[in-house]
Image (cartoon, rainbow, N blue to C red):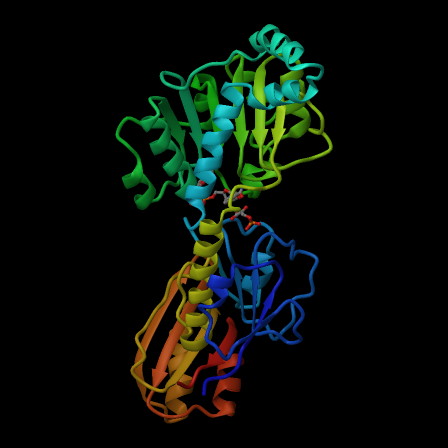
Length: 391
Ligand SMILES: NC(=O)C1=CN([C@@H]2O[C@H](COP(=O)(O)OP(=O)(O)OC[C@H]3O[C@@H](n4cnc5c(N)ncnc54)[C@H](O)[C@@H]3O)[C@@H](O)[C@H]2O)C=CC1
Ligand SMILES: O=C(O)C(=O)COP(=O)(O)O
């Protein structure tokens, strides 16, 4: 039987996803020397990641909670589940737009504050409701910043709701571009989106380039009375600047998924408890996707949907496979082949791909590989990790 790998979970992972791991795997929140880690939003930046770990699976989209660069230096892929929770986030953003457009949260708070007889309540209701009169969505403009899995779905839904949509993404993928209805207008930059939209929704990853993307200067460009929605990450928006824009009447509402002290109690803020991906369907989709990717990596060395490694897959045609993570520098394949040739190993099949600074090589050889050969491969400058995966 194949090795009983140990999978450490740092968050609750959908049981249907865990069921996709081979039956003999051991899964738990408290395991020594795990082979891999499954995580959702737990912050791994301060964590001592054991040397036994050879892969991390993020059951979700954002990987800013994982020290990806450090993992790359260790030759260790970080997987995520692109698109698997996009519908869940899309639906919550539509709910957020409606909350902002119809002032639903202040209206509910008003209702909670009512007391007295039913007759008194009805009277207060009819007298008070005018303060919550809102606007309708058709004909309004939605600006979408980041047209990836989530942003492109939202753009499509907003068009169906009769809205005008303007979007910006400097690196849109072919898949997302195909998904966009032809009516979506392309903006040249973030500022153009902000100037033209009644609602602005953010769907970018948190990166150095997107930190405080929405700051005081950018807020000043927005239409008066606009609604800002942030279901991306807290750090993409400067909370203090948002509060100033709300107080100045520049922004009508800020609807987000990231509670913070700076926002607490503000009457024009709706802060949800990071609920974007919290549906049964999304949790299951993400966990299934990442559990399958992790298993294929652990058993066969194949890589699909890694944020730091290229996608590499090779059908098994031999029982003796080597999976080598290496820096994307010249002559790695030559040096790897030389070590194998010197050891008398015949290469049956080989594939090498790169992504940014990282490269990855899968080699099937015709006979068993000795530990000394693996040590020689590990000793090649630029090799970051070697795994021997006999079937
Ligand atoms: N609230 C929640 O529960 C959830 C939040 N998220 C957040 O949403 C983010 C986006 O998720 P997906 O759409 O699935 O990711 P994705 O990777 O499919 O899309 C992100 C898009 O942002 C674009 N982008 C990057 N920098 C940009 C910039 N400066 N300006 C405009 N566009 C830029 C990229 O080119 C890409 O197309 C995640 O990274 C995560 O932080 C994702 C899922 C759930
Ligand atoms: O997928 C993402 O990026 C999310 O933010 C969802 O986070 P969660 O898995 O719900 O903790």
